[in-house]
Length: 185
Image (cartoon, rainbow, N blue to C red; front, side, top):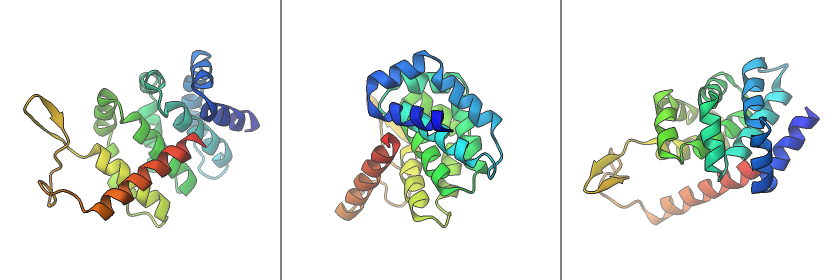
């Protein structure tokens, strides 16, 4: 557990650390840890450190996101999020999925494995932080329509075609900034 904590904090510190950890198999190891340690009570300290490390490693680093997807990390994080009653683990898993979904191909993978539905389900949790992070992820994974020369986010639903109120925009930016800060902690 102390080694995982150190790895998590090193991954938050700088890009060079993220690259060193990834090149030495750290991402694969963390995913394997999530797959091996599945008891939500007995293994909680280990799970917290492992998912925190993955969230940090996937923050603002495209190659690490791709490596995390390639080793089955998307499925592991989604399975963890489905199973955990722990708010800290849920927040780190949501942050990790948010980081991963910043890459278009990986975003499709997150959606394919139920990320959109899971984000909506997490919005029903009692913990306010989990709900707000799930809302951010849900909006990020919302369906997009195509038109013109590419893909742009035209959300479906009651607010389609209307600009969000400035208060809503501020709140979303604050939540996104908070997720980035927490992912780097």
